[in-house]
Structure formats: C-alpha cells, structure tokens
Image (cartoon, rainbow, N blue to C red; front, side, top):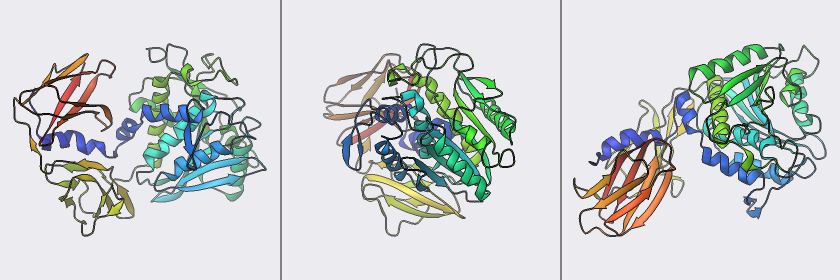
Length: 464
C-alpha cells in the first residue's frame, strides 16, 4: 500500500475533523461512544465527576435529583454559544435550560427537550436516553451559527404530573413567546430486536391536530426521507398526553395558547417498549445503542434544519507546513489549544506554526463567529516515510491489519482514526511486524498514522 501524501490526507481527513456545515455533517457528528458514556454515567452504571467530586448518580427521583441537575449544568457549561438557566419552579423542582440565540431571527424559537427525573434507580431508557440526546444535539449545534433560536430543555418532575414542562409552557404562553415547535424525546433506546441486529427499528411520532403539530410531524417525515436513517416510523394520532409535549398542547388557556409539539420515542404503539418500564431493571445493557444512535441522528437533523445553519465554514485544511481556514473573506484568529490562548498576530486566513501542537481558528463572518475543532500539527522536523519503508496489508482488510517496517526504525507510534478524526486504536511497537485486530470495526474508511522520532506516514485503510 502506498503512502498518500500529507496534503491529500488532509483534504480527505483534516477538513472533516472540524465541525461540518451541512445537515449531513451534523448527522455524522453524532457520537455513539459519547452517548454510551453519558448513559453509563447518568444512569449510575459508572462513577462520574460533579463539582470536582467522584460521584454515582444512581437515583434521579424528583426529591433526590439535585446531583443529576448539577451534572447537567456542568455538561452545558462545557459548551459555547449558550446561556444556561437553572429554573426552580417549586421546593424541589429544577428545569435545566440552555438557550442558543439565533443570529437572524432570535425570536423564532424551537425547543428540543426531555425529562431527567425518574421513579426508580438506574432508569437508563426512561429517560436518560432522551436527556442524552438533548445534550448530544446541543454539543454539536452549539458550535454552529443558526438563524433561529434553539432551546435545549431538560424537565424535572415529569413523572409526577409534567410539572416542570407545564410551568415553563404556561410562562411561555403568558409571555407570548414565539415557540414554533417543541420536539420532546421520552424513552428512545429500546428496540425488541436483538441489540445491534437488523430489525424493524420502529419508532413513534405522537401528534394531534393542535396548533401546527400536524405540519411539524410532516416536517419530521420530510427529514426522515431526505437523509438515510435505519428507522421505520409509526404515526400515532391522537398521540399520548403522558409526556412533556402535552404541556405545550395545553399551555395557558386552551386552545388559544397551544403550541406545536410532538413526541418521538420507541414504539409503544406496536408494543415494542421496554419491559422494564418504571423499574430498576431499566438498565443500559437492555438498550439497543445502535437504534438509539439512529434516533439521535434523526432528531439532530430535524433541529439543524429548523435552526437553519448560517453559511460559515469553520473547517481547516492542513499541509506539511501550513494550516488554512476554508472560509474566505472573513476575520480570523488562531488559537493555541494547549494553552487556550489566542496567538498574537495570527490573524490571517493561513497560519504557519513555529512548533508542533494543537491549533484552532476562530472565524468571524458578519455577525457569526465559529471556531474550528483543535487540530494536531506534528509534522515539524519529520520527513515522510519513503515508498517501501512501510508496508500496510491487507488493504482492504477484514480482521488483521499488518504494519511491516523495512528499515531499522524503532519505537513506532501507531494510531488508527475514523473519518471523523476520532482515535480508535493506539499501539506502541518496536517490532518489524505489528498486527492490529480491526474485526470489530464497522465497514468504512479509516486512516492509519505511523510515526517514529524522525519520520511520519499516513495511510488510507478500507475495512470490509
């Protein structure tokens, strides 16, 4: 296998590492590993950190979920371009709300939401799945400028009467808020087919002929048809009133104050809901994470469509010596990601690093400012492996990928990345032949980086 040039690898790889500018790019950024980690932490399967302390969030019942609420606030605080509201609505109740203002139409509001309280320990499906989806969508869209405002809302006390969402919806009606659509997610991780295996992958959209909810349902169907998801929709009309979307149907004085709202979740309509509903048996291992990821991708696509991406490109192209913003005719500020500081004088479209490190660019076009993902720049002082010095085989590969060195190179660092730039495998080796087992990886394109103290090479790998 021949080495592809650094310039070509960056055109194929580095520019897609940064955050995307199309709806498909948004879909592709949904990270199943992040979702899995969140579910593990938020349902108490593993410890996490809140306020610098190691904790376990085992229970999220309404009178015992301040720890969970604090965790959610910290997750939002890690994001840019949002304003966080910790909304207390009674002695125990706390809605956690993050608002991303639209650049063009800030009064046009779309809400994506879920409840985070429970009735028992664990409760991974009900409703850590919906909560995790809101956070993942916020993580991705908060890096983008949007024409319209998106509110990422996590409701409390849903399980004892939709109290958190009812409080918010009634206030919104009284204030005359221009809420154009509310997408509520409740229990979206269980599918009766064997997890990860082909099946019906059905899900429900619950709606009623209230406000513009039918049109909202139709918009969701359009998104489902415009992009590729491994999902099959079941339309439910009249939809259930047993989750937070109903608070917006019946906000204020019905029907004058009703808002458009729908529920998306696993298919109760076809009796394909978790058998562990409202019990401590609702555990992570009972969920189909592949199905759940598809559901999150679908909702992310809808919210990106309604938020309306502003056309600013925050991706970066990298060569052996230079980093270049792909957005022309803008203002630029390059950052040293290792220190978090702007680089003095680095305000041109291209930047030539004087040292290896991690770099990002902040791009301002009109009223929109977006920052690229941090890119590793480590080619200074390294020459490329010559043809024949490194042999990577078989390629395409099904199970074992071999890296063979044909010189005296010692102490190699071997890194395997997927197309999104995520590091999947890492190996240090001083052997002439190193084997990576890639059997568990999905089919697709990957990039293998082989680096010594003096030379560097990147290879395109096809997994069959």
